[in-house]
Image 1 (cartoon, rainbow, N blue to C red):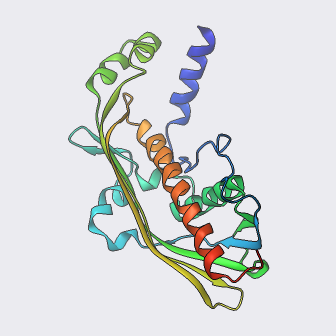
Image 2: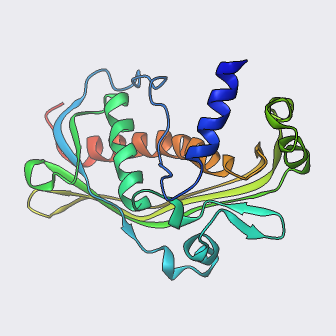
Image 3: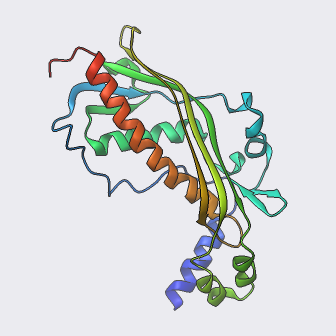
Length: 229
């Protein structure tokens, strides 16, 4: 019980301030059976160019200082992230590609040392979620209340979108153009009293998003790069 209480206090202490990370556990990822060997190339994922300000529906996440957007709604406030989403998303995408084993070498912003490099625009990284009244009430009863409401869920919506996803070679010639890739998720997501779960929820959906995108990227490079396979 003391250990649980310590973990609860640790979570509460680290829940404040601009320190949110865009990441997820990659340990469970496995190599693709259709890719028995990595493509013999070095690939660079360039930090995604952030164009979210061009879309009006991103205003709440871009301009709100904390994760509460009013009317009992929570959002993944941009100002709470430790580093810019464009960089963090590109970095976890690199790790996802490495775990899938699609390419011999993958790195972040190593264009000059790579055979091919990938660029993309970040158009949406947006999550909003309703407050869960039961979790709020449970938080008033300390650790017991927090444990009792640990399985709480509330309605939410998540949008993740990259646009103009392009693969070029080291001579800047376009090899493949994946274009735009957008996923929207709606339903019930894990909830807590203070809306901190909204950050973890969008991270988990990013894992699903990247699972699809890594395979798309591998397929495009394999089909268009003229590699000796």
